[in-house]
Image: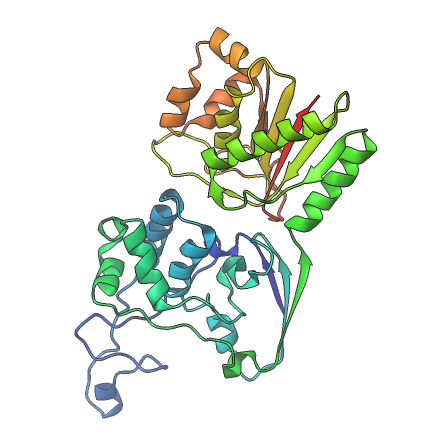
Length: 336
């Protein structure tokens, strides 16, 4: 039985054994052909260390790539992810229960899919690295694998590892949105769920969501409206401050909603947003004026990737503590 939650990609790892380039590869038991023949060679060392994987993850989560793109690379460097945990128990009957933090229909991305067939390929990894100009920022051992095209392919659909495998989805972002929709309706709001902006760049997502909220307000005069959105947005880190994608999205909105009867909340269901101690933040039509009275500049905070300290100074961070469940993010936009 495998109990797998979103966020697992960053919590467990075993680097895949790569022989140092230019040296004979290890077999499955880690014994070189020369050693099996009786010579006194020592088993070859792995060329990728756990510290390299840690540094790789730091680069990936800051580059602006989507979770699918990030996980494609993680899978191809891991002895656990991309179906390789299932492969380690190839002949066993396997049952996987999932809490999903990925878009609908992409379950192989949850925790980088340790027990599911991997739809990505080594070619996907090379394309992602080129798309975001990542090679120069990779640790040397991983950069060399990419430059010399030495990544190993992950198990695919039809492999023996998945012949006796069952997968059940326990909960997903859809459950979060449905609960929010019911709560908004019970409080008298005209509510709508819209996931159009899932995996969009955060500025583009903010523009889209505020546009749809205004449209709902026009369509429902004299009634409070609530736009509910899930999924995640993409933010490229440009500074060394404290924050996360949810606080960055709210920060992007506050100048656009200044002086208007609009409020927005954006938060991670796991209770953690980026490298901050908050789950997210709230903002409304008064936020900009309150910030300016304290000498806070939203543009400067955005440039330094320091959205947390901006909202924390206003008392507008949302702090839940870790929830120990990750079902993606939740955004609520209210207007009257």
